[in-house]
Length: 280
Ligand code: PDD
Image 1 (cartoon, rainbow, N blue to C red):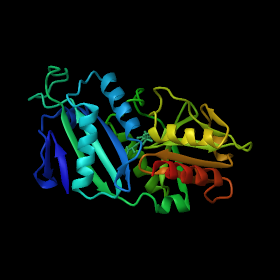
Image 2: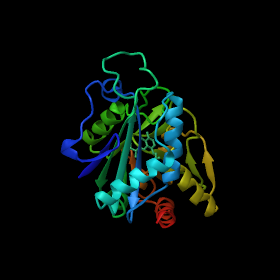
Image 3: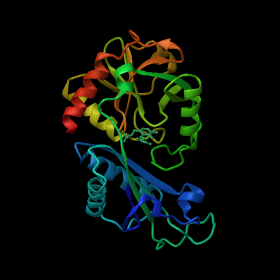
Image 4: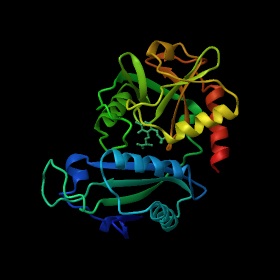
């Protein structure tokens, strides 16, 4: 597999990043994950816009233009013959040559890394079976709207979910669901309204979230952007999550309570289908 590091395409075994890189030492880095379907990038404009926002919020100036970033993504997808899978981009504040909490000179070149992952996204067993969810307290920092690589807590709760025989964890702050470990969270009420937490610094502003809510609007479904409790989720007719890597994934169980019929629900199935049709 070829990877991209700072202007070069290299075999993965030959790619290196400094031990003094701030991404490694301080998690001082942002990232994006974009799905690839039929060899094409899904919702790339959205990912690019969010990347720019994350960089701006952290005061990181990137030397590369949007056109250059697009060209690198396309070239790596081509080099690795990715028909279906993911492409990962990470940008760190670079290598300051030493360990120092203070930011280095803004002129220090950023570290830019990209790699691809071949993955079956369309034919997903999770989408067919539905996810079992456990809820945990949201112990992340208060800038969850910035897509940084500080992913230790999401890793810990995903691990915890697995140990409990579940597929994923949803996080809860002040009794209200924020989002999933690496996805946005939704329920469908008895009246058929789709409910998902409103945008704030409490959640990542999902690119798939926006696209799927647009699909829901096209289908004239009611959407309520507001927080919901775990109790409301457990009593919901349906629940699901969205992300670039999972598209729309139904939820069939939350903390042991069966959601709806216990099978993936029609709203999630319809949104998954429409979103995929639009994306290809
Ligand atoms: N995760 N919320 C969190 C905390 C996430 O990490 C993600 C994405 C999302 C969904 O955002 P989007 O629809 O733009 O993918 C929501 C990626 C896929 C990951 O970390 O692998």
